[in-house]
Image 1 (cartoon, rainbow, N blue to C red):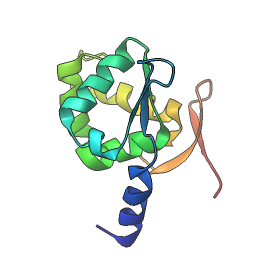
Image 2 (image 1 turned 90 degrees about the vertical axis):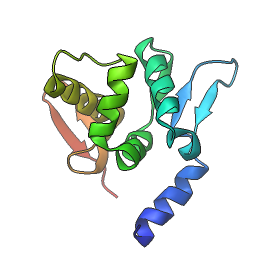
Image 3 (image 1 turned 45 degrees about the vertical axis):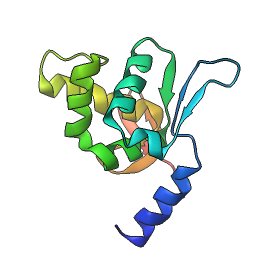
Length: 125
């Protein structure tokens, strides 16, 4: 792991990467330790499917780094969250979820996705 990768991982250990609405009032936060476990990611995807959870842009970045897009598609197959008529369709939906959250997995950048134009505008650092 690069020094930059180690720093990002250490920062994310203390930062919530995803959130589930219950138990109220604070809900449940998911951190790097939980999201290493494919079963926890499946649980999170199940909650996302019923619109009770969200994954942050940093959360998507971490999930892809930890499990790969292909690994997340396998987890999605178990969860049934994203449409899955074909592997290509499921991958498109996964990337779309990343984009609308504010993370572009293809360019590894954070920003804002304009759904009308289909353009991802990276955040200037």
